[in-house]
Image 1 (cartoon, rainbow, N blue to C red):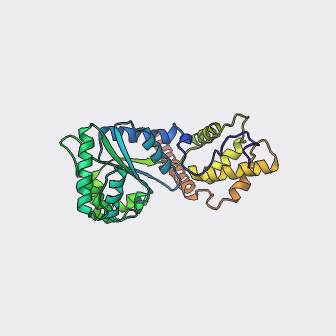
Image 2: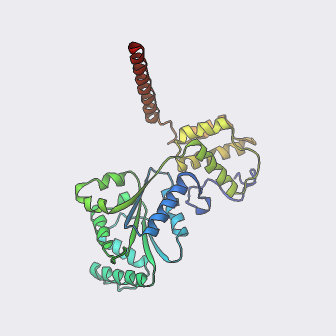
Image 3: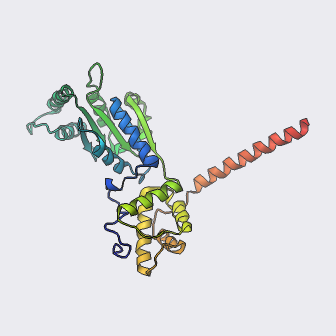
Length: 301
C-alpha cells in the first residue's frame, strides 16, 4: 500500500506483537529489566498490569525470547479455563507425555516429577499467563497450589501474570487473599509520555527501513499524543491510518490536518478529560495553598 512510497520494507505499525519492534527504553525497558531481575531471583508470583493496548503481550513475548538457555519457559495465552485444563496445558508446555485418560492428580504428579528433574539439572521453569484477569477464581487457586512445589531454597515453578487492571480488582477479593500474598513482584505498564511516544514511532519506522527526512510535523505528533492518550496500540492504529492518508494525497510529510483525519476515523481516539480535570484540580489546589501562605505572610509582617 504505502510501503514503496515511504521506502519501507515492512509495515511499521502492524498490531501483531512483533518483538523486533520492541523499544528497549522508557517503560518497556524498565518492565523487561524488572521481570528479568524477578526471574533471576526466583520469585514465586510476578504480576504485570496495564491498560488495554499498553504492550503487555509484546512484553511477554520479548521476555520469553530473552531468558537464558537455563530457563525453561511456558506460555498460556488464554487462561479462561478450568483447573484441570490449566494442568493439562502446563503438562503439554513442559512436553510431558501422558495417557488421554490421565486425571488431574496424575497430571500434577507428572508435572512435579518434571519440575524436580529440571531443578536437578540446574534449570528454572517459568510460566507466563497472558490476559490473566480472565482466569476463573478456582483456576487461580489451582495455580497457587501448583506453585507450592519448592525446595528449601527456591520455587520449582515461577508464574508471571500479565493482565488488565481488572486483575488487581479480582485479587482484592477476600477469598483470593492467599494468592494475593504470594505476589512478590508487581509492575504497572504506564502510558507513554510524548517524548517516549516519539522515540517509539521513530524506532518502529527505523526498524521498518525508513531513512528519509522528518515524517511528522511536531503539531501532528502533539495531536496524536493527546488523542491516543499514550496507548501504544492506539498510536499504531492512528499512525497507520495517517500513513495511508499521506500516501493517498502524495504528501511527503504527515501534517496536523492529515493527523486530524486519521484521528476522526478512529473510534477509540479521544482526549482524556478526566486526566485534564485532575490536573486542573491539582493546579487550583496548589494556587489556593500558595495564596493562603502569601496572605498569612502579609498578615504576620
